[in-house]
Image (cartoon, rainbow, N blue to C red; front, side, top):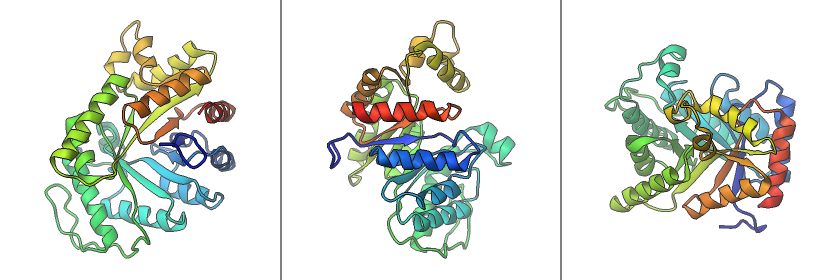
Length: 304
């Protein structure tokens, strides 16, 4: 499980970028590569287009891989998603990992003016469509995804790893059966362990080929102000998890992130590897100061 330098296979994430300062993001990508991290992930909400950003950052780095963690499948049409990913793959020199997910109904309906019916079926069909499009096949209408006649003119020069970010049985089923890996976020260790077991059983029952990547994106903060850091995490989690909106839920929050000393954070990450993670991404919420992100990355690099 160690890399060539004897380190655990770790990546880092800046969320949706956390800033409009491209030069600052260039510095963070260069720092991540210098520290020996294997991957650098960016998300998609309402700031940077992740395919444009990763393409630009790849020009200033040499080896580190860039992950889209994750692209909202409602933010663009399936053909536009196929073309964006193929373009970023070529510009990055084949260093792209594409993560796709459902996102929220609010974003699909209010932001992107899309129908949110049967999202898990659409997710599975989107993954199948992307694989077909990158082969150069002509699309035919599916059950939910009704694209007809499209053929991607840019054939990727290699195999693009395609991960699914998902929760719940339907989402895990889509990840296990149709993708190359599963991206998770904000899961307690027991929840992560149960999900990994379900995915492995599902893949074994359908004779799916290995390897399959299991990659938790974990909010990580090396800090002495643990209470303050957990409060910030709670603000983010509170909008999506009822368990952290109740009084006295700091423990529930702490179980879903890695906050504290470098030893505490490293211990949490190692626990995820023991439970089946093939890589772990140390994530940021997206609004931290860059010096905080840099401190965490440097401390974690030394501790791991």
